[in-house]
Image 1 (cartoon, helix red, strand yellow):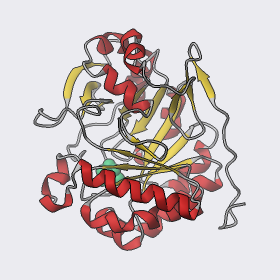
Image 2 (cartoon, protein in one colour; image 1 turned 180 degrees about the vertical axis):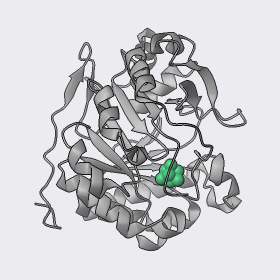
Image 3 (spheres, helix red, strand yellow; image 1 turned 30 degrees about the vertical axis):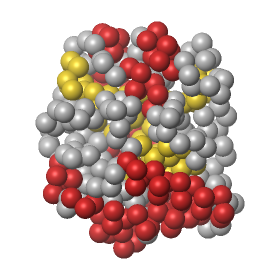
Image 4 (spheres, protein in one colour; image 1 turned 135 degrees about the vertical axis):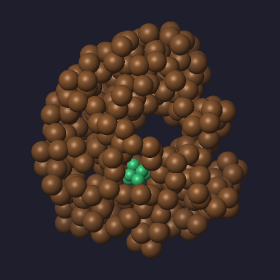
Length: 327
Ligand code: SF4
């Protein structure tokens, strides 16, 4: 049992993928069979498909976070279109069913069925967790819940803390492993230790920290809210020390925006447009690769210029982790 009396979610075993050189870990990330990440570039060059893609099953959301980059609206993809996407994504290991807020889709259960066979991650704000977590149990690998800090911070940058907390608990009660994802602003830095403490008490496996990107609502953030990579690194190391001191269980990771993380994500919009993200010198930070409704991912992957960054990020070698700083 956790401290809150909720049943602990048992750790899932490490899952070997493909030829076994890469596995999916109980920490909800990929890892190499060996410890060295020196040959990530070779692995990326020899690959035919991404490890992971983000599918925006809706652009709608019931929050309006101060840092949200996805504010442009677009019609939701139909189940038929999602089936075409799933077919054309053959070869990909993990699919994030993302938004916007995916729990706003009334047919999310059918959407999950469409992507059966992939490792499914659900990035969510959890506001509808109480309603939907039970029917997602056993069908998604984990829920990655946006959670930026204690109540004052959370309300200021995101929305209703208590509603989200109820959603988080609903996922946990349903036996769905959870991780937290927090956008770090200068005005939220002081809350990071409390965030990891909350994650520890709630049984989250990981706290992912990311820095805001200049798109959507984040274009209206005051300039001082953007911290530098050096500042982020310093704060991250202090957080890792506190994690050790207090014996907090969740893994902590931070993705700074550097040359090595540029373009590492592949995001599929509701209309099938597939983009490398974030690409720093593009006005909207998207680099269009094509449309997944018209071509298989293997064709889009061939023209994707950030293969090594993709592999390095998802194998943890270009980001900050509790075990290692950026190389
Ligand atoms: S960051 Fe996520 S939860 Fe917040 S408004 Fe954007 S899509 Fe919604």
